[in-house]
Image (cartoon, rainbow, N blue to C red; front, side, top):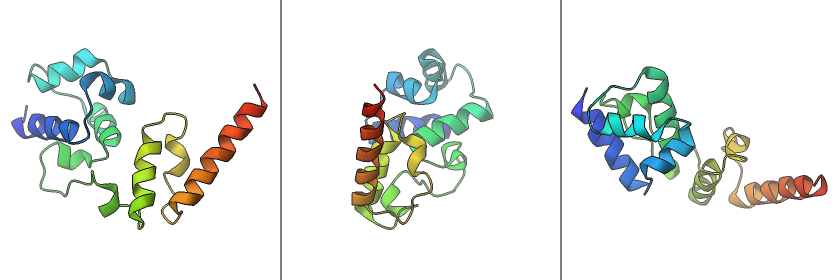
Length: 127
């Protein structure tokens, strides 16, 4: 396995302050598998690389060691508004809200917050 993959995975996990356990929760991948990859025991299959990259907000190609830009900083990537990018990153880590804003590039942070409040209100009505 590429040591570049291992180094990039470790670095982006450290950058986002994500433990192996947290990464396992975000991806549905067993923590022991992540540990095996980080310790160069096994190589992840392509579908697992995609899950890791998605959870860490980086490009799968970059994670594998290709000279592609790291897109882990949402403010420099998809979102135009840095505050919206930061809030979208917060939402991305909430399983119930992750998919809601994947195509909300032009939404402001305030609009995203209002949407989350409204969804939480709707959910509370049905309890």
